Length: 219
Image (tube, rainbow, N blue to C red; front, side):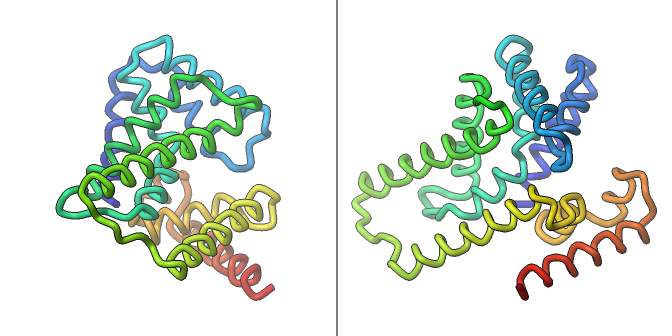
């Protein structure tokens, strides 16, 4: 999954360096800022999807995928691969295609809900595709009730964590930083350079985030 995330980010950086994507970095900055006012999220999503549908489609596609990069990684991890017929790469490519197809329909109302719609549409389409492939191959094995319950519980916990972040009960930027370091494998040096702070400052943010998460779990 690290390779998939890195590929999306590398494609985005390459598109930005091409010099043809005015405002791309500022739009991604707003979309990725959990603390930005909802109105700014609305404006950023609306502008991004308009540029994607009306501008250089291939270049702006890289920006759309960067906006939902972490969400796509989470979606891929949650889906069952069916090797050797369908691997993680196949699922990743299907999710990308469905996400970009959904993006052509424009933003939601309000536009801040666009991220949820894109991922929901993409995952639903890919899940149906996987189900069709299982039927086509004659595989009849389905997830057990316990497995389904575990997935449901994990999804519920993840949503509760997002609600806590949005409500300001957890330090959003610090939580995202912990996720990027622990799950995506990004180094503290990279995070510090991106944020323009020292490695020690990143370490302290990480400690505060973990402390807040542990307090939330204890409650």
